[in-house]
Length: 179
Image 1: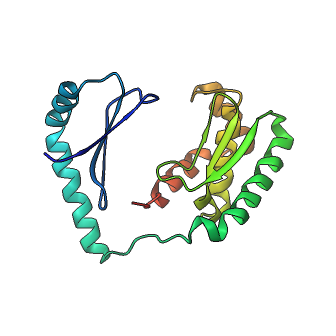
Image 2: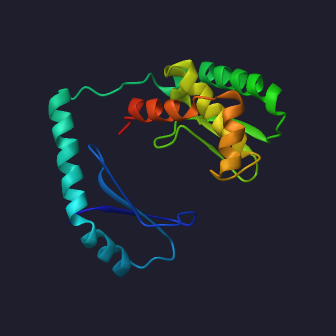
């Protein structure tokens, strides 16, 4: 089985992703050896083949239609303004502190919060319905106080986004489709 391998020191698990452009990508922590990775890939071979087939079917049904987003260079500043405005709007309620706001061209995440207090957002949030953007902004803002998904975390999110569960589902359906 052909696959690309990337080691990351921040990875905690071996992970397999499949995309129409990159094919099979295995990411693993730096400390995991080649033999263990090969065993993992062999164990997941049925899953890999099934999902490669699903992607192939989707592409043929779509006729290569993919969600096309304008390049970051053309709309990154507007995306950053929108996200910053929404962040400050919601933070009037929470009064949480954070170090930095970053809006970037991220391939796999809508947003993230580092332990150092940096809030990072995907510029593509500019193109989703505002309520989905708000959900991601509040989700990451709440991570500045709770770096987990505990009941306490979700209670904080629900203070300003009471329908967060429905928005989670909608965001998954919207997808990132950037491969």
